[in-house]
Length: 353
Image (cartoon, rainbow, N blue to C red; front, side, top):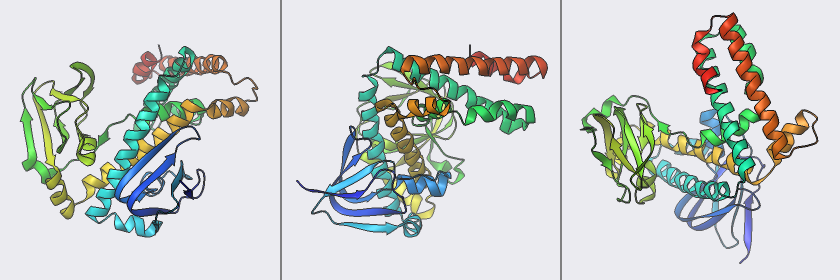
């Protein structure tokens, strides 16, 4: 079959595309590809949403090809943004993004199993570094202390930070602000009760309002959700798939429960909920693609060494230098705790221990 290239990775992202019916193939890297098929597909959305709602100006993150016989209509960026006011258009955007997140997650899981011990250590250390620097950034945003910024600024531009960001950001949950107009849809679940069950058909999404939830896969607890406003169940609802996990009330818990039909009725009055979900899915897709790039190539590692004039960009060298950066960060924080009486930094110091 002959294919037509719709756009190249690293090309300018100034439009989306509409395909009434058929399939397309995305290449995240030359080795990692996935197929999206269906009706009323809105394609090439991630970069536009990242630019217009997240302040992240980016070129195309992947290459898109379609069968030569396919008919795609270009949607200029301005029209794409305007069309997000339409429920059906926004829903189609969200469905495609959900498919992209699901399929790029599968690529990441597959590639992660191929990592050797050193690569896993590099990934884990990068994640640790990113979380510590992010916690430091939150403290600076609260306090605006110049000396804190002096510590922070050099770490924020580190490529170690960028690598860790890619691994962490794609795993973050979607959160929304207070939705008072949906208070009639709140349901209280007693401790131990299941909000939704693994393998059940996903016909609703949920938003945590109070309490906390245990995430169980195969009967084993794998995570806890305790942040108010966290959205869960959106992937199953958008893709009409079975639930991937059981959510169980850890204590008395209050959630908003919204069915597919109710979501349509809500969005026809106020589309902020679905728009937030779409933007968050675009962010997940964006960071998934960065993660895939990090897992399947040494480009980031090479850039990190070349930046500092080091020719050896092997994994052991990267681990050695990342450990040195972690040690330096911990020393700077410990020094600030002692010299500035900055006890508020102690939790970050413990993160680095």
